[in-house]
Image 1 (tube, rainbow, N blue to C red):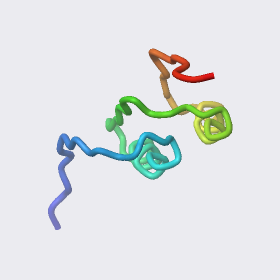
Image 2 (image 1 turned 90 degrees about the horizontal axis):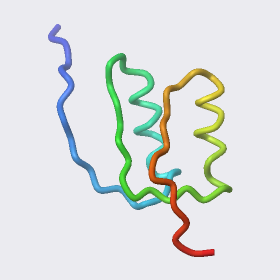
Image 3 (image 1 turned 135 degrees about the vertical axis):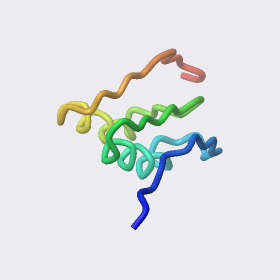
Length: 70
């Protein structure tokens, strides 16, 4: 049986954190992998998933957190 080898992929996913939850989880399960989300909406009602993963020890970094509309 051959081992799967990671590849670099660029995927366009709608800008909602819940749409990327599956990929975030997959990256956490595969050692040495990472996911970079660009222009992802961080609606306060949708960030609970990330907060729980961080509490469990996931290394998730949020950068350039800006408010586009208030």
